[in-house]
Length: 247
Ligand SMILES: Nc1nc2c(c(=O)[nH]1)N[C@H]1C(S)=C(S)[C@@H](COP(=O)(O)O)O[C@H]1N2
Ligand SMILES: [Mo]
Image (cartoon, rainbow, N blue to C red; front, side, top):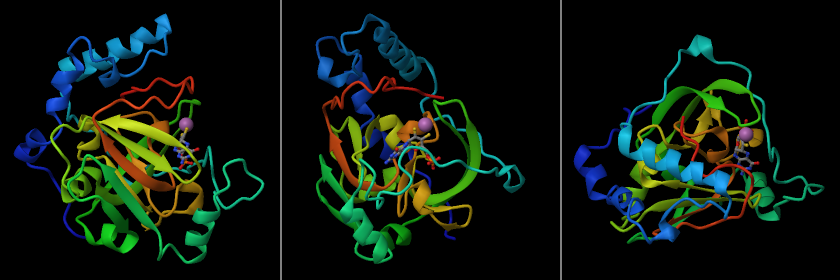
């Protein structure tokens, strides 16, 4: 394993963190997490603004020891090649069949160099290994070791533009989640291809999933297909889950 990658303060300041200021400006509703017209959801925005202005943005999620690693349930989609599933993906099935040699993660949007990153390319980048606790909104937690490349490193490679505010992550099972720049450049936010010292298993999102350790479990998108950097909040509809769920 190569040494863990850390961002310099300068790199972080130079990229999208300027977006946080914009979030607090009145009159740019497309820049704020949505309330879906629901008065209760106003709390989401309040939590977000309070977290992002009062709390240290880059505090680390707790990391554990090898002896803390637990069994780990697989939830949501656990096999995109299942033809009986509503979320069946023929394309993912073909990549899986070819051991993901032809798989590529597309990075698009507000980047100078949009393109596709193969598994081998992602694995050649500096990596980080972390043992963390996953918290699912359904009420369970589990601890595992994850290995991958920091998302921020890949966004830098792609030439992320200063007006970037959100990173939208699309999966082969039509799942989608977005995160802001503080989470995207958080040192523990990684594109994980390894779990507990092995390749990422199918049921946990092979070949590459997002790990967002500072957010609740549903932000950690499995079966990654496309990452789109944008300056506008993309409303993917009301799943009943709050957009911001920092832990
Ligand atoms: N593509 C995709 N990503 C996903 C999901 C999903 O159904 N599809 N479920 C989410 C939820 S709610 C949780 S708790 C975790 C579950 O990850 P696991 O199956 O590795 O436990 O993945 C998240 N990422
Ligand atoms: Mo979850």
